[in-house]
Length: 191
Ligand code: 5GP
Image (cartoon, rainbow, N blue to C red; front, top):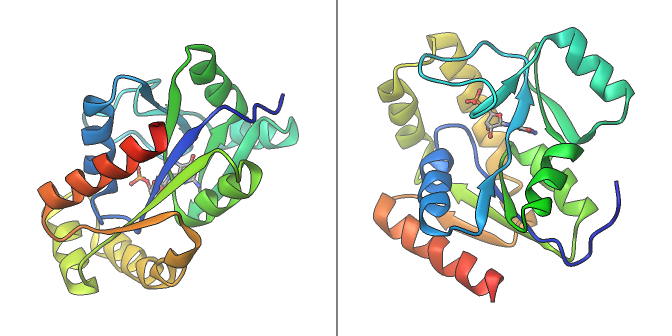
């Protein structure tokens, strides 16, 4: 991939259930110059999710082929057996539109992307107010099994320990306040 020093990108990262997807939606609605980076993923689509909009849902075989072809900026097995990755061509597609990609990705992936574009990346870590609160939110979401919730909680504890690697940490206690803080952070970055 060509190196574009002036081509910015924004990463939102957090433990699952911390509210980063809602804050990502808020930012995408608020700033017309931002565009969601559609990741490739091998998990099943959830109800309401659309292929090519929420994710590029692909098979494990296709995903592995793309790894071989060096098609990813970063990829991770985020959960046991489930691959997720940011495609180089997806970032390029958005830059070609003169827009700024917004990546909603896990903590390891966020660190890898940031290492590749250190001068042009804004990385925002959304921190849940507490592990207890995170657990409540994951249960309330109603999309996860008890086992999946337990896995996500364990992972969250580990991920919070990496928060100092990111440009900005926002505690998502009151959603409106977190959005406001994210808006200000992005405004400064766009200047
Ligand atoms: P979910 O299955 O809930 O949609 O996503 C699970 C986790 O994978 C979330 O933390 C989400 O941000 C992360 N994720 C989504 N796309 C990517 C990606 O392209 N790369 C990485 N590393 N993580 C991703």
